[in-house]
Image (cartoon, rainbow, N blue to C red; front, side, top):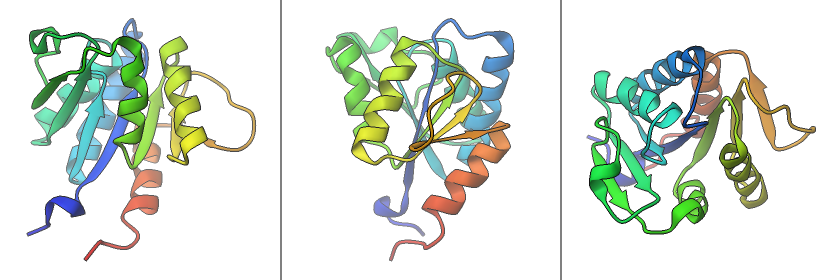
Length: 161
């Protein structure tokens, strides 16, 4: 049985007003991550956050939502754990720092801030669509499955003791 430290925490970020295609990708991504025993961490609201959480929960996984406000009831219905931070958009830094890797689906200004924080702090970032980044720091991948394979290769290459 893996210890709590053996768990991998993967942030899934993207716009709250995501397109149907982006939501499908995020839901697939959440399910694939849960299938690899990753805990899916999001900002806890709608769009990409709800879709990734839904996919993870449907696959039997665990989800954590770091909510911007003070009320845990504001979280999407697919959260296993809802944490009201009261930090507004400043929660983006908390989300990034709590994850072993970050996958961005689509893009918005909030997504851009999370990507920038991750790159600055050494958290690996994989992007499915959305923002095109200059070389270094962000790996563009073609699909949710490719993102999960990249995350898996990076984080699970040596199982912690």
